[in-house]
Length: 443
Image 1 (spheres, rainbow, N blue to C red):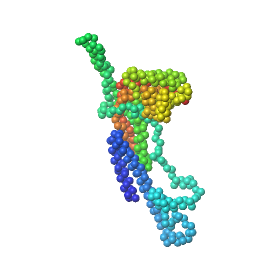
Image 2: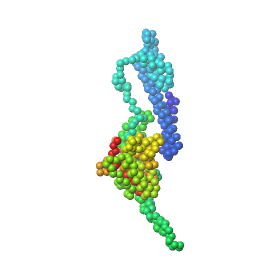
Image 3: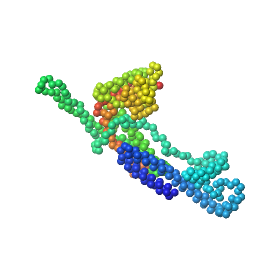
Image 4: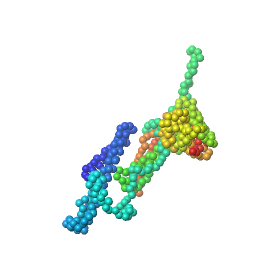
């Protein structure tokens, strides 16, 4: 048992060292290797904790049995006399050579065949008409904390698609130059005559540094006494706060107003291209030309191709459900090697890239609004040149404050981060499709 505890402590020290190192590392193969090793250590620590606890339980039980025998003044010679009088002795009676708890331990952790056999025979003999309800204090509920179900969130698909930059270390605003008047060139009318000259000029794009944050007030008792070996309630709370942080940030990158602490979302940028799809009975075939129109507007005005079509998952579902006049799907899985399909992709996908239409990747994001239009039931589609929109951010901070409400034994857990979103560098690089043709789809 001493060796088990020493091994467990060594693993815990190595795990703490890995966690500290990973906090300072960037993504890459080295981080992946350390993360894989940390997962192995967590599993080993859990297994060792189970063995240590089983041994402690067994020793405690044996001690109680021994004390019981002493209090009843049962002596070894008394046991030997009793043994002679029993014709079919109980395998785990008081005077037995084998202990039930020892056999359970050896059977489970040492794979002892003899112990397993004795347990099996004991179970065959001892059958009673007693259910678990008779042992409510012994048959306790088991909480599968490793398989807990986190809150389902919309995620951050658009956030993942945008280029990232390091936020400057100081200041609450970032100024970005936008060239609004460029040089000109023209033919020279005659030799030695003046050539075309236009002075360049720029306009500053001011981007605010915004704060995204969330907090939880948790009792000291919950943090100190909650959980099980290998399970940390504090980590679960921080994971939930981080999920809320990135989901909210993603929502603001799409829908932010640019005021009241919100970054200016892509759809709110002044001067973006628009396509209106008006249709009382929308179909996939009628939406398709609107997508082509949205793409050509980026090509014609930004002079560069769009590289993403962002839509709500319900709109992707509408598109993948579309049929031609012969009831053949218009968008099919890429593995089907389709001929003359308007797009390819998988209906059962969400976030990042789920397929492509007109050769452009499709990203689904449930943070796309579905309450647009006069009926508050329309979603929108954004056709974007994603690398035109630059997100500047710092690492997300996690903080734990025990002094704030110390008088109430309350600990405050906080997650916060600073971002600056330059969404207005090239307004012509975005087209928004809206209109009654994008009302709640029917299938």
